[in-house]
Every structure is written in C-alpha cells, then in structure tokens.
Image (cartoon, rainbow over all chains, first blue to last red; front, side):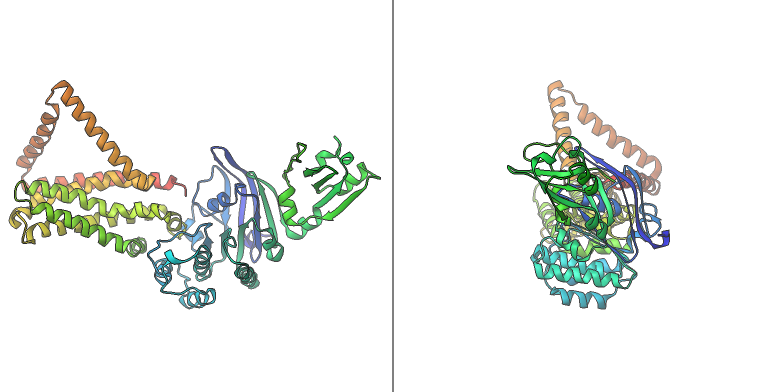
Length: 300
Length: 225
C-alpha cells in the first residue's frame, strides 16, 4: 500500500489517563474501505477517535491523515473529515436547519442540496428543535452533517447504538454505498459486531487499551476458532494457546488462533471446532473461566 | 474567526438577549434608587455585569457539552480563543454603552446623562468590564462553568479573608490601599492630562487582554474533550 492510498495512518499511539492507558496502537486505513473498531466498553475506542480528531492530546506516537500530521495540519485535515460523536451534542434550542447553517460555512465543500436530500431521507424535519430529537434522530442529524460536506474520511463513534434496527441496517447500507466510489473511507467504532459482519473490510480490536489485532475481516474469520472440549484438554502446555476460555461443569469453550498446534498437542482428544464470529472474538478474548484459569490475549 | 463568532452568536442568540435584558433591568432598577444612586457605582456595576454576558457563551457551551463539536470543526483552537475574545470585548463594550444609555434615558433614572457620558465614567465602566473579561475567560475556557464558579468563589474567599484580617487587626490597611490606588491614579491623570491618561489606560487594558489571551490559548490548546 502506498502512502497515497492510505487515508489514516496511526503509529505507536499512546495516551495515559489515571487508571487507563491506550498503548502502542498502530494501524492504517486505505482509501475506499471501511474499518470497524471493536472492543468492550472502556477499551479505548472513543479515546482513539478523539485522538484522531485532536480532541485529546497524544502522549506519544504519530497520527497522519491524508498524509498530513493531524495536529500541525488540523484545519486541512478536519475539513476533509466527517464525524459523529458517541453522544452528538448541539444546542437544544436550534432547529435542524439552523444548526446546519451554523456548521456549513466551515466546509468549503458543503453541499446544501445533499443536506436537504439526506435529511429528507433520514426523516429529519428542518424546523424541528434539536432538543426535541431522540438520541437516534440526533445521530442521524450528525450523520447528515458529516455526509453533506463530501468528507473523505468518516469517523463514527458508536453510530448505530441508539438507532432502531431498520435505520441501523439502512445506515450500514448507506456506508457501503459511500465507499463504492473509492473516494471515502470509514472508521467506525461499535460494540455491535454484527454490524461489522455486514460491511467492514478491516477490523481493529482493542482490549483494555491495547490492540489485539488490526487486520481484514476475512483474516479474522479464517484465523480464529472456537474450541469446545473437556477439562483434560486445558493443560499447562495447551492453556497458553488460548486467547480466552470460559469453563463450565462439563468442559470449556475457548478462543484460539493456534488450532493446528493445539490439535497436535491434544491428539486424540475430542474437540468441537467452529469458526469464531467477531462476537465470539470480542466475548472470549482475554476472558478467564469461572473456575479461574488465568489466560492472556497476545497482541500481534 | 468570523465564522466562529457567527456560530456563537447564532447558537447563543436567545440566551445573550435574555441575559442582556435581565442585566439591563437590574441596572435600570439601580439607576432609579432615590437615595444612593451614584454615577460611579452605576458605572462600576454596569462594567461588571456586562462582562458576564459574553462569558456565558463559554459556560453554556460547557453546559451543553458542545465544545467537542466546536473543536471538531476545521478551525484551530487559537482561532476559537481569538473569536471568544473578540466577541467578549465587542459585546461587553456594546453592553456597557447600552447600560449607560439606559441609565441616562430611562425616565425613572436619578442619574444625569451628562454625568454618565463623561469620558471618565465611560472609561471606568469599559476598564472594569475589560479587566473582568481578562480574568474570567482563561478560567472559563479551561474549566467551563466551573471556572466561573472558581473565580467567583476565590473572590469571595479573598474578600472574607481580607475583611477578617482588617477586623481582627483593627487595621485600616484596606482603606489605605484603596486610597493609595485612587490617589495614584488621580496623580497620574493629573500629570498626563486627559488624552495621555486615557491612552495609558487603553494601553494597560490592551496589555491585560493580551496576557489573558496568551494564557487562554495556552490552556485551551491543552484542554481535552
């Protein structure tokens, strides 16, 4: 991938707070693709998106957007970014139309006709006060703003939470449609992993501030397996092969990317092997069983 | 910068007008006191009250948590701070002139128009409003509404400590200090004459604003949302 093809390049990004550190996160997003950012609540997804927007300051590392430094060239960078914050905040007394009129002058590429069309499609009434919109409608409004200035990179923080299933599906289809032209890329965080099954080309998984992986969705599907078996399989030499295990009375369910190695070690043992879904990866990764087996995920 | 000012004016239009009306009503009431209405006190309070009108833009943004939106737009933090200062100085100066006009024009007013629009009185009100803005904005830009509370709280504590000290020591240090300041200002005014004095005053206020602006840029660049 040449740098011209890379819309977003995050390198060794670290940000420390009291009691939480986002540590050494690196990934890149090519032009024209969708990347999903997944992880439990508090994994660092919002922090990462805020770092890209320069809403919080980097402790170390580098973020380049469209080949430019996200701090030194912040105006040029942000004029080509569309964003939806986790809780879209506007002044409640403004109407949909008026709030758009406030935002529009900041973007040379603002297209009022697009805004009218998109708000119409989203069911937003121009004269309605923002304070009277539901959480889902506010997200729609924020999306309409992001889509109306021809952004080349959309940063969406949990855009589908708070949306009804029909609109969520519509949003995902819309995002797929947006990248079809090959001009726009999307980075969106979510804990609804089924959203990513539908549209994501790349997946970046954060756990407790550390990146577990950042790769293509296909690779995740091919690489991770869900193993079910008896307790005898969990031995000192096999346990480290699991990224997470949940144990029960009759056996265990574990997540692994080392299927062949595991099979070789427990040849003859009865194992049920399934391809892990993204939800399985998020759910089992780093999980310790109820009997207290201590395991660790291994960042790539 | 104009786009940010426009955004702030549109977003805060109703609240700005409402606050301006409330402040004006209080000042009209003040000007109508039969006993004790003084031009100096009126100008002093007009200066202080009108300084709070634009500061409210920042605290409202904090209340609605809309600062993250403003800082996500393609504009630098420095431009946001600059526009806040421009808006604050411009609107509070207009507010002061409006207050003085009200004091002069309202039929119930006990204050004389000629007195209220003496250059000394106008400069006094504008100086006070500028100094209050210069003190308040760095705190509100850094801490939002909490910054305003911090400054007001600290002023109260400082006042109580000073009064307690004066009371306990039976000292007249407070009166001597205020007297010295007033006398020094009068001496400087007398020596420089009106034009020189007002020029010096404008220079002092500009310097205060510049220092305040520098601090605000520094703290606002470090603020995280």
